[in-house]
Length: 281
View (tube, rainbow, N blue to C red):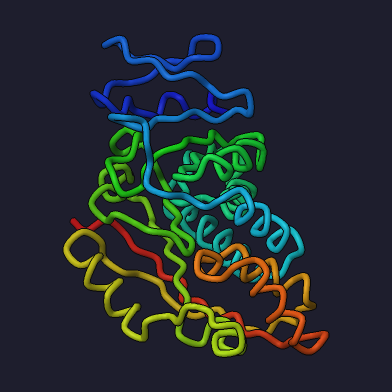
């Protein structure tokens, strides 16, 4: 709930601390933000408009696919890194940037009893879903490409799972002992569907570009690849395609026709790099 994380949030206009009074968050300089009835709050600066987030259809497809357990290996990898961070120091707050439905953040909180979670996403439908994903999640609508509405040094673990990231902002909000867990697809990820369904390809230089972006701000620690095969039926494939960036490039009718032409059960590869970064000295 927002009440659990409000002391770690910051006003997007002036950076001041926020307090929750009834159904409104406010700062000492008079900026106020109404809490939506679904439990999330919009902390968008300026005009209050965020960069384009996932549509309601994409968010629904993601929840359907994740709840079916197809990415449980990735969920387990996230939880394991939260546990490892707890071995080095206390984990009192977990932040998920580009949190989507809050599925991965919920797993991180289950691995850190007593910790609270901040879900940040630019999609209003995602913020609604994340608000109900776990009793210790506070859901925030915000533009992840701008300054995060989170207080400096208030987060012990930050997650970015298939999501955009701003290294300097993540470094600012992390504690000195904190960890940044980044999940990015390798070129093998969903390879069986790329040509068949015209999905977007993963840039082969993606790991190199990630390392370059983090250099000077973070030091990479543990890293490895989670790889296994899923057995997907047509409904699973449709949800998988519908929840990702390719959904913006294919019409619903075109996707349905392509999926219908596939075998009844399709073997599809999960191949995801899991990298853990620590704040540079």
